[in-house]
Length: 101
Image (cartoon, rainbow, N blue to C red):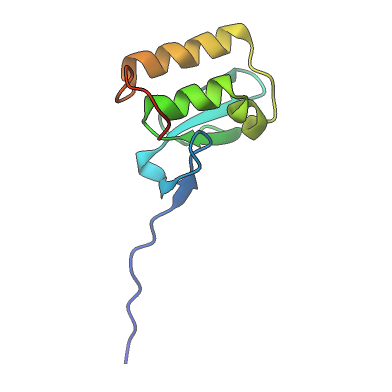
């Protein structure tokens, strides 16, 4: 008898809230040697990556609490921090809501 396996769905952990979700639901932030820290919309750029949920609270916790810096093993420059905050303010669900997760 042949056993069929279910489809493998890669899982990632949000550095903001710690919740595990499918990789496709997360937004990848990448640290590259040449371009610094930035959002990776394709999820395929070379470099050290960290994942965040698409919730404003997770982004706030990750950016203000130092969680993202710890995950990427770097210090964010003011320009990088500003660019990530601008991304979260314009493209993240619940940007005006309170709370984490």
